[in-house]
Amino acid sequence: MDARLEAIKDTVLMRNPGEAEFHQAVVEVFESLGPVHDRHPEFLEAAILERLCEPERQIIFRVPWTDDSGRVQINRGFRVEFNSALGPYKGGLRFHPSVYLGIVKFLGFEQIFKNALTGMPIGGGKGGSDFDPRGRSDAEVMRFCQSFMTELYRHIGEYTDVPTGDIGVGGREIGYLFGQYKRITNRYESGVLTGKGISWGGSLVRPEATGFGTVIFAQEMLKTRGTSFDGQRVVVSGSGNVAINAIAKAQSLGAAVVACSDSSGYVVDEAGIDVALLREVKEVQRGRLKDYAERRGGVTYVDGGSVWDVDATVVLPCATQNELDGAAAARLVRNGLVAVGEGANMPSTRDAVAVFQEAGVLFGPGKAANAGGVATSALEMQQNASRDSWSFEHTEERLTEIMVGIHDRCAATAEEYGEPGNYVLGANIGGFVKVADAMLAQGLI
Ligand code: GLU
Image (cartoon, rainbow, N blue to C red; front, side, top):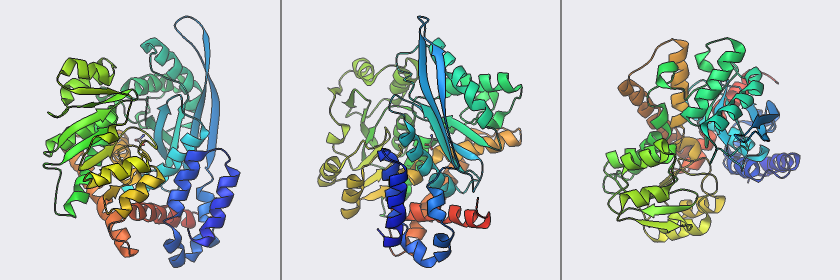
């Protein structure tokens, strides 16, 4: 890392003790930014990096609620409003027991660059709670969401901060959150949340957008090597919203998607994952992959273990951070891996990224490859602002344009900085310069 940036990084790490994921996200970005600071000494003078690493506002609050047996439960709620240089804070809410400030800050930090890359007017933020929705009834989830929003409502708004879902937060939770916001404020403010249902201000394609976008990005990478998804053997991790839609899109482009996973195990389905059945098991019944395997029949279900043990030419990590390590990466590379498209946020460890890059594997980092979700959130905001709703075809076309645009911008930036094909560098520099220019223009705030 550039010596000037090293010193700034050391201070950031010292000021944010114990936040391993945030440190990882910061280091990964800083490693790309040396050459930018050679060309733009004004960024150093204005302490852009120091400011970028310090969230504009961090909100931590108590979320009390009662479970179905009448017992009081206490969770912790977070919203980190990281950077508003380009627009209102924008980013998801994650409900998962692993959530703590370091996770929210890593996600919020990534979101700044991701959102900048989309070309849409959105800043970066993230939030969530250590609440575990797994095994909770609808009524419990509703009471939790209502309590969460009873604090959050005062911090958000269409011009301030616009949350949506992430892990553990989907259409059901957004519904409960929106209902409570509307009740407290007495305002039908559609633009305050995205990921809404279609009849109450949501956008078509938003549920599919992250998974679709990841595949569109990966397809653009494959095109640079004169190939495509057609005939690729694909392994996807996860089996939630992002994974399911990535599987569907990859299949529609002619790929054989042979495996996916959940936190208990993975399934190998050599005939190709049955997306309709997977949707029913996961989205309608809120079941497990084991249930999919039982109902599908003739497939292998591996309890525990790693889905990265299954060979593939293209992998799409769509589960969670640090799910693919250096050893897994090396094994995949030995067995013929061609491309990686990250549907999740920071799913590859730094070791894994190094292995992919050294081997010349096409590697699309999450902040570029999974930006289709937030980009379509911005399209939902546009529709809300104009009280309009667009067709599926038009919205999908916009998503495709945006993803191709992100790919091309990353590729062109990498080329400009002398490292053609390095999408990590392209994404980090491309996102950073846009935000840094805006921060410079807006003065010391
Ligand atoms: N949680 C998604 C992400 O990681 C979507 C954010 C949004 O739509 O605001 O980008």
